[in-house]
Length: 152
Image 1 (tube, one colour):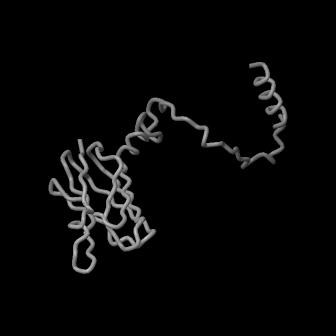
Image 2: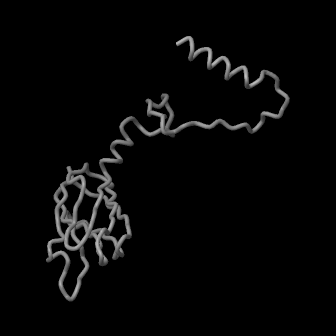
Image 3: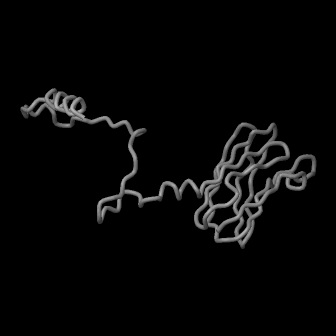
């Protein structure tokens, strides 16, 4: 504790006490990797609400496509705006379509090694997530590129 206080006093003394006007516009660097969230002061609307970052993570679904597979994580998310981050690990173009509860959202074709994002407002229910592409007249969906996601 004393060592930390001494280091703080040493750092403060290095800043100087005079106001020569040359310190205007000085900047401070912050290591954001070490910043942790804390409750916002009352009335502060600029800071995210406690748990907002965790909630946003729960509403992001990672989708990995390849020849004739589609993998999603997580398979259950809270209702609301849900973002699907799609990567194509396959050797041919794939895409993603989310369908159910009167909702239909989709990416375009994603080239091999590419990525795309689609966001949709999803009310509670079960949705089919599949690849809408075709190869040689055969739908990827019919070749096994389909799964479901549950929205609660």
